[in-house]
Image 1 (tube, rainbow, N blue to C red):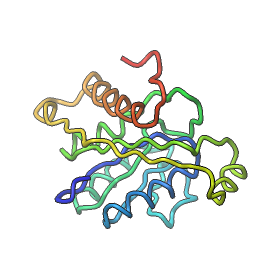
Image 2 (cartoon, rainbow, N blue to C red):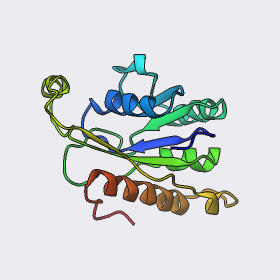
Image 3 (tube, one colour):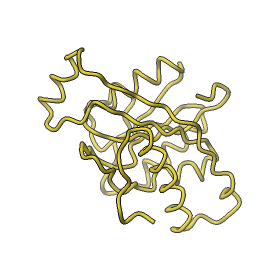
Image 4 (cartoon, rainbow, N blue to C red):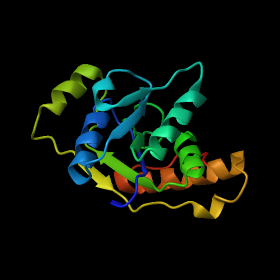
Length: 179
């Protein structure tokens, strides 16, 4: 994990319990303020930035300002929980932030939280015999795209690279129809 700069963390998203697991794992390694982009407000005490369905772009602007101030941004490019063995198509938010901010992306794979249902997930969180593995990958640098105009093709390439790294770390397959 880079110690001299802030960065963007992109992880797979098996269940709602991934946010506190990821937050605890990262905070153990680096003692910096983290903000999570999330569709839900349930983890607001962790620094969640809720995504408005009406204006999704505003959250990226806010995240960019927080990155500029030296904070970390954590997000789940799948966009929602997915306990299946194949990742969902990645959304382009991580790619946009990386290209706008010129920051590294740290891919993370989470295993052991693939449980459906809020109650089951909550109970499994307190079952200490359940092994949960958080793998932190090598930083991804997208400086080859920094001097180019950001377009759909570049966003897809960057997103695909991020999702490919996450897939390796969490031992999931990539979606078939990704580029």
